Image (tube, rainbow over all chains, first blue to last red; front, side, top):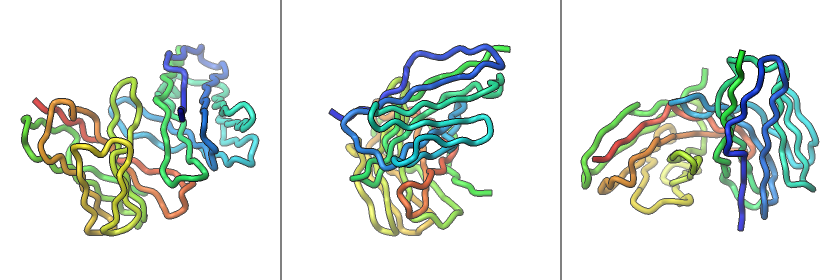
Length: 112
Length: 113
């Protein structure tokens, strides 16, 4: 069956360290993979998009990698800050479909 | 600044009532979406629309209908609300390119008693 999975357990990181979140998928051929941030009680906010033929994308302290062989995307936040605490969602756009499929998200907590 | 607005942040309705949730976007986007979000289940697509008067079923359309009479407005209708429709409802819009990011509204927390 088709699945997109994120670590359901919360991730707790010391301020200043690099936070790494994982998104795995099975039985999809993604054309794009996106990452969103969601704060409690609010809608998700788009952060980054990576295409199937790209290995890595960066934006300020954020980095996303995409390995279509492993069927995995990693999302890194370097020099993490307490303000980075939120839930992070990965979302996949299959090459054969027009809608986005979201993972259930990973809650990230950065402690001072 | 781009914006997606939803008609209510919080709504309490009784079982059997007809419920309307409205979403308006000001970005001239072609695509609009309705999701519900429940703990542990993530975002699940209810319906989406690629154009005025067009609609497509998502993964969980049962018990819902939608209307898109104008490009900027996408309405979600619960014909007869039930307690299992208590959830956070999120509207989103995006441009024509399917790889483009989705812009989300603030959400409506609906409670059906």
